[in-house]
Image (cartoon, rainbow, N blue to C red):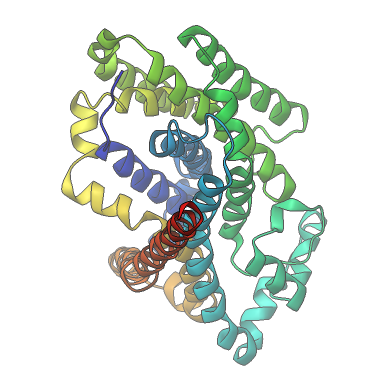
Length: 383
């Protein structure tokens, strides 16, 4: 049955997820600036990294929403256009941010030393941070493709590397999903994918931490696949399912909130994230209204640029001004906290307008040029 072409609240929830990730990267410095050590024990702030899993579920769902029907069979022009659009979605901004770091790395040995410092042997890979091999690896976005620890430049870009693997697999996954004929089978596959991920996380002792690297690719695959088959369930669901949309959304949020009262249970939030995306897709209820509001939608639009730059800003400020920031009183610390948040938002907004949007437009122009060339070649052959 036909579905809405635009789902604003899914843009809004992406912004909320990015904000949650920001909090998990910032709360340590914020606790010091505000002289509130209890913040370090907040399960909500600690588990902000799980917003990445919500990104992966959303990505699979939205890609199916946009490209539904295009991958019933594999055709090179469609696959080529998909990869072109996806390339211009992630690589230009990642490259811009990476190149912007180069002068700092060359001119500030103290910053490099801070990035390479570690006290726990489990983090010994940090000794290679900001290395030339790490630069190449990050530029190509292949950090999660191997077990090599070549060093990080912008640590959050591991999620882009994992996402690229999802893009590569998407045509085949989408074609397989389009062959699912019933809602029940789609839901069962979605639950099985997430259940497998949770079991793996527990078995590998990652249920209560933030595994990246090659394990990040595993997280991406199961969440991304769940998002794809979740969309298939949404597509096949009966028309009257939409009347339950608000209740599903409310139940998903309640489930996520409840898990945050127990140390290990947030690993199950992936089930709440999928239910949340499914419920929001029907655009019903108070939560949908909030996530579709102007400010939240704005945050969702800049979320990719905000996400990709915030960690670097926090790290640079902590290196350059950390001692001064920690010596501020509560009022000064509160002002500094808001100023750092505003700076991250401003940087994300500037990157969105000057890099992200122009690169996406360029990608569409490249795709249109290739399509026009193919059409011209076909016309000449027919003549």
